[in-house]
Image 1 (cartoon, rainbow, N blue to C red):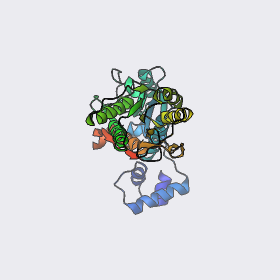
Image 2 (image 1 turned 180 degrees about the vertical axis):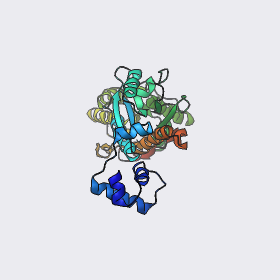
Image 3 (image 1 turned 180 degrees about the horizontal axis):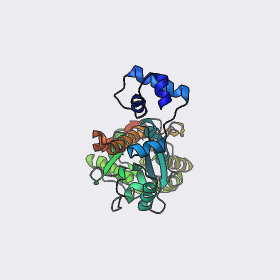
Image 4 (image 1 turned 90 degrees about the vertical axis):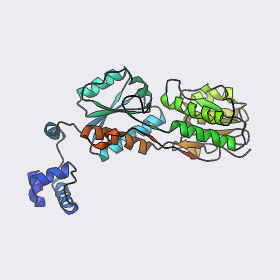
Length: 318
């Protein structure tokens, strides 16, 4: 650091401020210090910084699985958002429960943790190690801890309303697992949209987020005229089952998914879906956690991230 200061013609304190991303450095000085750091190959020493600041600049991410598209996309988006804030990311799987995952993170001295999706249902009633700040993705905003989630219910309602507007007399629902907050919220949005239209909801058909479960559900939903699927992977399996049954999409059956996975536009037919903004969701979660770690006002940041209907060829006017 002394060599960087000498090369840039500034004090060691100024170099420290640049390294710690302090706003108290003017742009020209910051550029000069960063150029000197590049020329000298300087890298901040994370362990030394942790001793000095009491923070490891590392956050944990707790998941139950990375097999689902939502979890894998959230992993990537969270890693990118953390890096932008100068934090490293440590991944742990809650195979033996969230409590053990928290203990492993505490042993690694992370500054805080983000809990994703299915693992979120395991948090209530679990004791959090002292000093471990926590943000939970896909949990109620009144759950007693900082939480963020997509507008699952609003997106589901928009999908249902769109199918009704296209001329379908009712909309069936291929739901996610019963213990999933996201699945429950999407089912709620579907029910509320049908109730608002004066329509009694059909019996829910439930899958496990996988395309295989969507294909299996196709045997039950083969006679439906419109189906809202709780995610795009199940919609993919359903499309295959409908094709095998001789049902045409969208001529005979309208189908809408949820997530807008990168491949959704290349399904046959291209899938109408509800887009989740995983990047915005990850940034909201990381900002809330870093705010709590650093004592910034954004530590209050619970919230709901909007979703959007993306219309493609799997829906059409009847």
